[in-house]
Every structure is written in structure tokens, then in C-alpha cells.
Image (cartoon, rainbow, N blue to C red):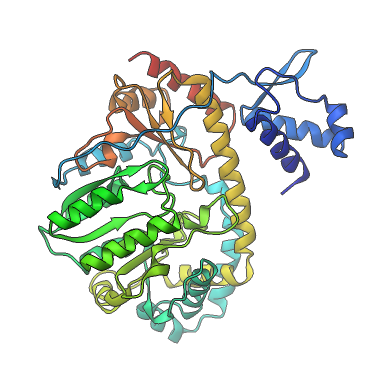
Length: 469
């Protein structure tokens, strides 16, 4: 981290904790230079960064001041409402209509599913691909197509060790991104017509997979901070023939909720009691803001019930489409399903990522990425507090790059989506995250792109639209 970024973080923390109050003048450039032992140019850079984040503003001939928030920071949403016991899934048309409108590169990308590509080391990855391909033999290309690149699988197993999970390499199947891993996992344990417990709200791709496989959804409410409602899940598993669960245990999309270790243990005990497999979607685990990555439920798995799915798409190489599944007792079935469909993800992409993980400084990259995402989250939260109407609620997750907004009841997020898109702003409306198309007054916003004047103007415009309902 550069010196001016450290200084900006220090002042941002003073603002967040209330030591520097809204409307208060912050130290002058000269005072800050002397107090923190940095050059005036470093202070200027830090203050420009804080301006971009929407935390301070300059006043002519008066200095810099903490921007006034619209009252107190926005409160957290409530527990999501109860839903029907089972639901036929039919959301694809709605999802496709929303996603198809997000392709314009000039749109403010609050509706995107990915962080900014500027946050990824694409040039360094390209060098890794060149280097790895130079040393790749024709025999290795054929061998890696079915089993997966051995170096990559070793590196993935090492990442599991970092999070406290001892995983045999033989349990890994390399896939075309996490979505294929999740598809294969679900196919390996269900048949058409089966019931699958999912989160509510949930990632819309989960709904599309259930729809394609002709599976029925059992929606389980999610608390925006604590995660899945275990009491409701226990009741549903006792009364319905649920064949599988598909949950995100950490930084759930779209809420950002995480189960703590105690609740993860309770969930695993419940799975164990009913012998129901879990497809654990864990693609955001490396984007934690704390010191250590969260432990996946896979780390508690003593019976091979957990099918753990991950990917490099959200942390390193979105276009490379390299993911994996640790299949537990279902590994052989998953591997056979893969051979019957796509056979193999790109071998050059696998070797490039393996080389980068070994030599490219992945952990250093992750620290920078997490820092950028956390700062951008603070900027969006501060901006929402300034511009969004009274009655708005928002999550404050400690990882990932999504915020879930719950607006006043009269807001229709599908209509808001259309109004915003006409002004060059994208967002993800709440109904695409529910099998029953609930959450009509909610929306997911992505803070994974650099915060600047365009972002601030977009939030101000959204605030005006919200007040028009």
C-alpha cells in the first residue's frame, strides 16, 4: 500500500468512528504533513482519494471538511420474510432480460456480477501463460485434459490448508469455473422433481440451474448478517424430502451474510443427522476483510457430505474460467459427469494460473484487492447515507463486493432498474434473486469498481429516483 493510501485510511477511520464528525474541518495540508511526517504532496494525494470516496469535500479558501451524512448511517435490513414451503422455479426470462441490459461498457456497473477488471493482474497472468506454455509438453496437454493440471491441483490443495482444511488432491476436479462445479455437484445428488433447499434471497444462477434440471426450490430465509435461518431449515428438513442443500456459508451473494463457526457446526450437524449433501458455494471466501479467511463447512466434513466449489473468477482471472469442486463421497460421480459433458477447462488457462500461484505473488495481490474492495464499500455506504431516502436499509458485510439495499415498501426495484438504465446506471433488482420473485423493494449494488465522480453522481440520481416512488 502506498503512503498516501495509508494516510487516507487513517483519516477514513477517524471519520468512521466519529472522532472527525460530519461538517468538521480536517487538518490542513501543512498540519497533516507535520503530524504524520509525510510530504505535502502525499497529503494532497490522500485528500484527493478521500474526496473520491465521498468522505470529505473542499471549500474555497477554507480547507477540507468531513462531508455531512444524511443523518446516521443506514440501518441493517431485517430477517428476510417467510416464503412458501416449495416453489417451481421459472426466473430465467427475467434474469436474461436484466443481464442482457448490463453489457453497455458506458453504464455505471452497479448491477455487474464481477469486480473491475482493473483490479486483476492481467499482464502478470499473461506472462505466466507464456512461461508455462513454453514448458508444457504435448503429453501433458492430453494428460491434463481429464485429470486437471497437477501443479494447479497442488496449489488449490495448499489454499485449503491456509483456511484450515486438509484435503486430499484426489478429491479435486478442475472445472470450467464455479458454475460448472455447482452444476456437476447438484446433478450428482439429485434427479428431476427433487426438492433442493436454497437461500432466500439467493444467487440467480442457482435458480437457473434448478430450473434447467427441473428441481423444486425450498427457500430458506437468510439473516443479512448471521446467514441461513437454521430453525426454518431444521423444520423443513424434518417435514420435506429434501435431497440436497445449496448454500453460501461466507459472504453470501447477494446479502454478504456469513455463518460464524458455531452456526457452521450446527448446520453440518443437521446435514449429518438427515444425511443430506451440501453444495457449498464458496467463491468469495478469499475476499474477506479480516486477517484470516473464514473456515468453510467443508472443514467440518467427516463423512464426505459436503461438495465444496470454488473459482479464481472473482479473485484473479474472470475470463479464464477455471474453478474446481472438492466432491467428498461424490467425487467419482462428479468426475464421470464432467467427462460426459465438457471434458476439461482450458489447459493453457490452468497452467497459467498454476504458474501465477507459484511465482506471481497471489497473496500480495489478494491483500491489495481486499483493501480496494473494503474502501469502495465504505464509499458506497457513505454515499447511500447522503443520497438515499429515509427508510432505506443496507447490509454491511465484512467481505465480498456487494451491498443489499432494502428500500421503502412503495419502491418497485424492477421499475427502478428500468429508470436507472435509461440514465446509464445498472443495478440488480431483488426479484431475480428469488424463486418466488420476492424482494420487489430490494436491489443488489456492486461496489467492486473504482469510486469516483461518476459513481457519486449515479448514487445521487438513484436517490432522486427512489424519492419519486
